[in-house]
Image 1 (cartoon, one colour):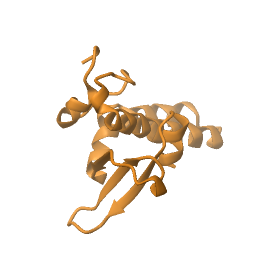
Image 2 (image 1 turned 135 degrees about the vertical axis):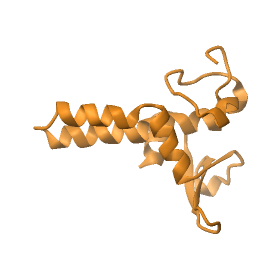
Image 3 (image 1 turned 120 degrees about the vertical axis):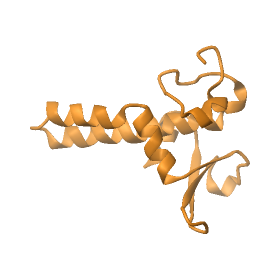
Length: 122
């Protein structure tokens, strides 16, 4: 699902999961798997949670659920867009961090990822 949202936002990437360490982590690499891209971002599931938290996704989800109790399909789509859309934009910014441009100024970086979010809107 995350790969789809990244592609919808103009970036083709693939995801691999590594379980070789105590805490698993995800490798997001630019391009399709068979392209063997060389730009990779590594994040843990904990970091994905922190990204959603820092960008207010959980609060938005709560507000959305309360506002749309009747239409379950609409709630599901909004929930999907909030979660995967936010993560996709965050990852696209990280994969393009060397261009020193804020592609998505509405996305709040974690303090340890600020170097990927350089640009005029620092």
